[in-house]
Amino acid sequence: MDYALQRRALLAEVRSGRTGVGEVCDASPYLLRAAKFHGVPTDTDCPVCRKESLIHVFWVYGDEIKHMAGSARLPRELETMAQTFGEFDVYQTEVCRTCTWNHLVASFVMGHKGAQAAPRTRRRAAK
Ligand SMILES: [Zn+2]
Image: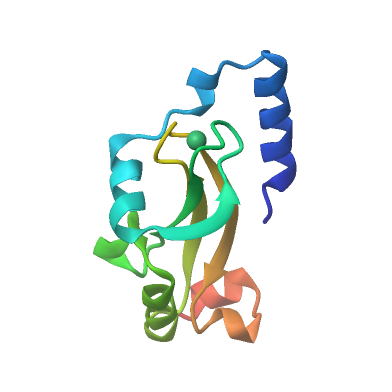
C-alpha cells in the first residue's frame, strides 16, 4: 500500500494553514531514537522544514516474529528476517529529526511465504 496521496493531502493542508505544523510534526522520542540508530538516510528534503533530508524507519509487526514485533529494523535485517520468518508486516515511516515531521510511506508484507502468493487464510491454516 502506498500513502503518497494521503501525504500530499496532509502537506497541502499544512501549507494552507488548515492543519497546524505542530499536529503533523509529532514524532515520538521513540521514533526519533529509531531514526537515529536504525534509520536509512534518503536524498529527499523534509517537506515541512526543508532543512534536513528525511530518514526512513522500517517497523516490523506480526505474530510470528514475537519479541521483534514493534521494533525498527534496517533493510539488511529485513532481508535476513524474510528468510527466517514466513510472514511479517513492515511499516515504512519517514521522519525528519529537525522538525519531527513523520508520515507513513508504505506498508508491505515480507517473509518467505509471501513469495508463494497463497491466500492469507490458507497460510494461516497451514501454521
Ligand atoms: Zn523537517
